[in-house]
Length: 322
Image (cartoon, rainbow, N blue to C red):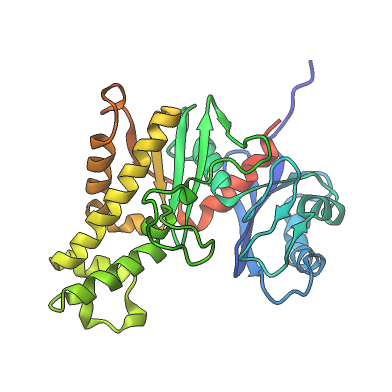
């Protein structure tokens, strides 16, 4: 029997974002040996973007991997399809249509490349290196500018028949509710529980309560961070913003629990900095809306990975998958 020696093998993990692309060389223990970033924008074509990536990363590959120790490339990207390796109609990337990302990367770097969406990559990172180690059934929810999610069942990411399963942020939590700024759908979770959604709620509520501390800020500075600052100072309106957000998130999570019966729901992203202002009502409304057989069984767990590194680590896990 031939044993696979991973000790010298290194994966290249890449997180493609709307404005910047982060990358890192990662060993099988989850140690990031070196990392960096380039701008996603400013490249006329996807081929130009990949050329710029190669030019930036290749010196580090030569330094840390030599000619033979780069095991492969894993990439997290908006609308990344694990089955096809394509990025399909990503609304926040500068190149439109179907992008043959994995194929083009493999041709340029000379190693296998796998692609998934950014939230699935985060779930993989938590499962291998973070708070979900040892778990086979959990849901990862990322609360940032938007709401992303990855569903793990029986130790496997749920991709669905076409590679796009798990868009929990776009499930409807309030029929005929708030119109989404990008998709046009009415009442989806992202419209309420994302940082963008919280800012919309805060602006609406401060208009209804002129004495709120939120009115001390100009319109353009009303966001989840300033709302948290006001909540910490005891402002009832800011506290109500997070209670309402937690209600919508908790109600949605009750649906998710009854769908897949996870051991835990992992929360990640800048929005969770609000702490108990958000987490207590989230837990309350989740439990309140669960059937008795599901109550008090599902843990709410905060990510253990550094926000700046999680996407790189998660993408790198794709390389070690067989």
